[in-house]
Image 1 (cartoon, rainbow, N blue to C red):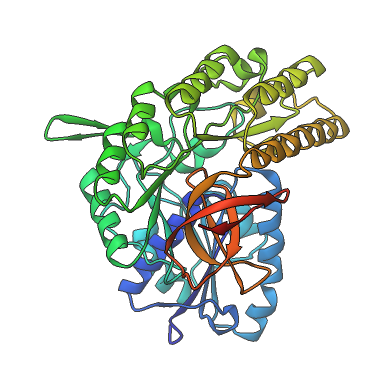
Image 2 (cartoon, one colour):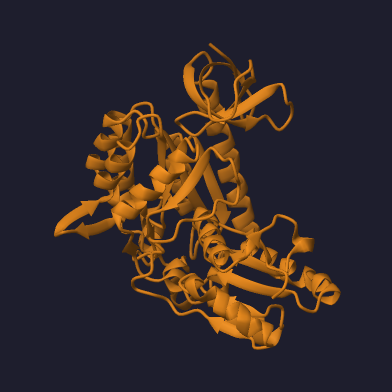
Length: 441
């Protein structure tokens, strides 16, 4: 390939962002240069997500829209990588002939060889999953240069087998990355000017790695990262409620630079639905976990995921979800209408029998409630003082800066000659539905 510029387009979760950075690193070692201009690329990679149906539909539309570039440049190679590659390989490469290669999330080390095969006119597919691959020895190429915050992948795969979720099938079983390599990556980021890292994985609090016979669990890892530099903010996502231990909460309490925000997906407030989902906890267990958070970390923000209209969900089940949200008073939430994912336990065992109009109505009610709860959360912050890490200019005005609190809330404030990556003390004066607004003290 004479044109060694690669354009990578990423869809979906934080893990996909981290994977794109791993792919960029592998390609850099083979002489490829990343570009953010798709028209000048000789290689286009679409990093995909299969978690939700609407995400897949967006990617289908995007792949079909790239035909115009193929017509302009016969030598252009288009590849599909990530979760959707594993799940829909035949349809994408054989039936619709939209791409030249399909590469699953555990085959990125061989991507340069796959490109050579594509250049020779061979359609390439490698979607084999690994029991060992963590890419621990690969230093990711950050695709947003001069950044403030970076994702650090600490584990891959998932063992939870939630009935609605395709992740275990497209990303394989859990395997935790060596803690030494995680620490090395964090130190490298600090040296490059980053001031915040988010430790990511499908279920970070099940992290478990053995070093010389000693078991390193997630509280140990979190403590290790926090102690690298007290001025480095440390976040993590996502936590499974069944694995949220008091030990983890006390570890957070011991270190001020571990951010006071926990994303704790509930998915439903109904015990019957939670059992069908194979979530391995009850409503009561979940509530006890939140009580522990409130006791040990009283200034901690909580966010969640909620699914509307899961298989056989009744109006009573739906009301249980609303009442759980009201009780927990979540600061923010990701909310979805259930979409059946082929190959999951739910698709094979449970009827997707909640009508779409009822799913939509229930989702609307969940969103309306969360909007009210989020507004209460922000209004409660008025008059308070927060340390904010400056991430850049406000989208609306170059006279204002934007950053986030430890609780992961966005704050906008007059710049006053401060710059990106500075820590500032901001007093909150008012709020909008999405943003806190204040001034530097």
